[in-house]
Length: 148
Picture 1 (cartoon, rainbow, N blue to C red):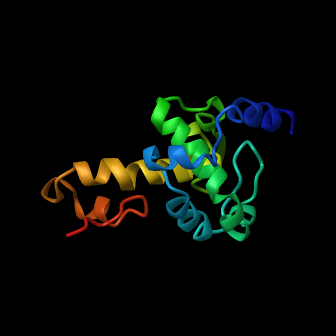
Picture 2 (tube, rainbow, N blue to C red):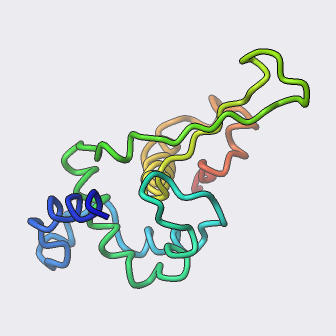
């Protein structure tokens, strides 16, 4: 809890609800709310904030999270805790004999995953011509189909 308080104290200096900055934002609360509302049940990251919190409170917290993400994208700064992941070794087979018998599963914070999805769908995917994308990449949940 101490870490979360310190994080939000660094963000509070920017008025996230200032209407003058609305036109300059690259991340909008309606986009974030839609992403939050459709979060599936998933493991929480190091912040231990559960997926149901984001899903059920998507409308109430979207503007704040959009402001945080907008600040991050606009300044090019990524929070340290967004770069951290909990890595768990999951066995691939029953008779474990070597390290190769484990599959690493990494879990980042849900806000980090929302930020990643936003960057991929808003900037990366549109920058790549369709003919350069494989069918597998086009079917990825992180990739939004091209708009025609």
